[in-house]
Image 1 (cartoon, rainbow, N blue to C red):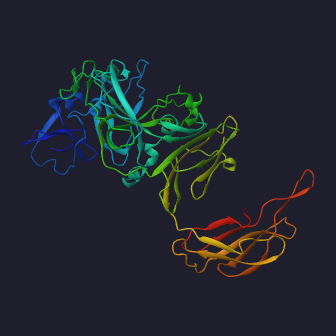
Image 2 (cartoon, one colour; image 1 turned 180 degrees about the vertical axis):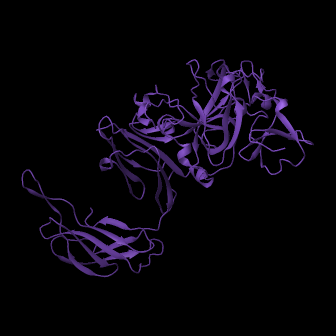
Image 3 (cartoon, helix red, strand yellow; image 1 turned 90 degrees about the vertical axis):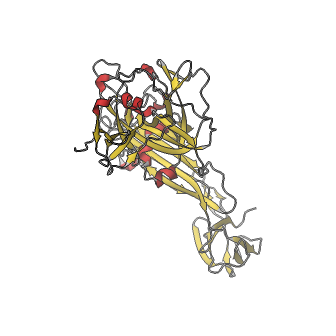
Length: 495
């Protein structure tokens, strides 16, 4: 007997039932799960022992024997008769596993689920359900949820595309706002939304499963797949469940009545799967588990910008890691991830420039629309991940003589020493920014460190273009460099 995609099988000597998807045998853990997915025993084919050995087994990690993800596939009927406009769509990533389950709407048929794991830190506290089981009414039933700050290092280590997990909607609507109020010019810290559904969530009933799974927990006002443990905000957790995208709610003020700027096709609605304003959720979650994990060492910011045809939008800002700088010598490191939603109809006025400093980065961003009416909007969607990395030690600098003079030749030595040992650093170089005799032109000169040299220091002279009067401005400054050390910059006449 050939084993086919989507078929249900049981080997002769074992009771376990599997459904075949994408080369895996996915274990259907309980009869309630089988019925809730829209099957019955008649579709389960019995095959000889060993027939399924070539298929790797996948068990859905779940706090309840019957996972909620199998009961609530990503579906939602349209309010328009005869149509089916889903608000949720399964999101496939490199580590997710496909399962099919029948929609609660009979005529909608089977819907795809992508069961996946995401790790990160809780943004909110999780508390056990109240004694009556009530939590956030959703139709007849209830749900509860929280926000998860994803562990970007874990995502990268598991070959999960960050651009698939963090979408425009996460930056815009599921986030901590940092700068700006609408997606036209917005900087935020994006999260992943996580939700758990009770029985009869939004009034949904199952033809093959008229009663809640027998292993779910009954409360006076609801039946839940599991009662969450108490977990404090900031705890590192692993979350398993149905990974999907939700519609960008057009009424949310964050879109500034212009959610259509994030269309990927003309006249596209936010309810359509290809609309760029969607965000990522685990909905429903089957398991939330606190685990030992790394401390947060990085901060990821999301940037959204758009400009209508004939318009230019600009934004400049500094970004600092939210995590404390460790003791010792450290400097900021960063990764820039530009999203596929970025659109450049006019390259002449579109840029995303980043300047790196010891403790922050400076971002200068601009986008502009194309030709009015037909050119379409310009867009930027980017992530900036910042963390601290070990820095070479700074150079300990001493200037002799300590007091310098302007406008006459002076001999001096700039000593460069190791900050720990105090030993002179071989090969150190001194680069001085000086000014010409009339003070109008910058002049640079280079000397060996730890070696006497003679120069004449002059102050910058600036001309006021309106009055023609001159006035003094900057003093000479110096940069000391050496291999294996952080450059040291200072003003020669400070104080």
